[in-house]
Image (cartoon, rainbow, N blue to C red; front, side, top):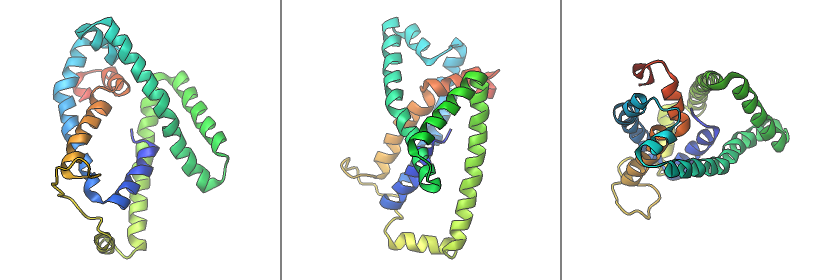
Length: 213
């Protein structure tokens, strides 16, 4: 899935700090391949219900409980931010009360997840991604036309020093370099795709390993 926070934050990141952040996509592709050939076969062979079961099998029940607790705390801190981003955007466009929007979105998600279970989550994810991709394509086309074409976009980006792809400086104190983006995002994508309980649950729920891949 693609969260509203990502849709708001990534364009702003590239606008302010340059195109180097795009290398996060390279790390995503590499880590998806790693999940396919390293993580997924193990999870599928064990027929786990949750990712935390693996921790109990591999280590101990106490490790499973600790990981479950930390994951719950992390999500309790993260979910309000994920809800706040789209709610704020909707508030700015429509003028509706921010708190009402946030509560409404939360109740809607709770309702369809409770009624439909994992199948409802998968279908809404599919619908959301389809709408998101169509909207992004529309915005890209209209935005490109409005500024005079793709060449004009590149020219303005270059004048603003935003086009930078191979800043090979290894200094970790610099905000974005080729190495920090590539290596750092590899760990991020491993957490998001490889060992994320929500993602693993989706992958394990399909009929076969081939479908999961």
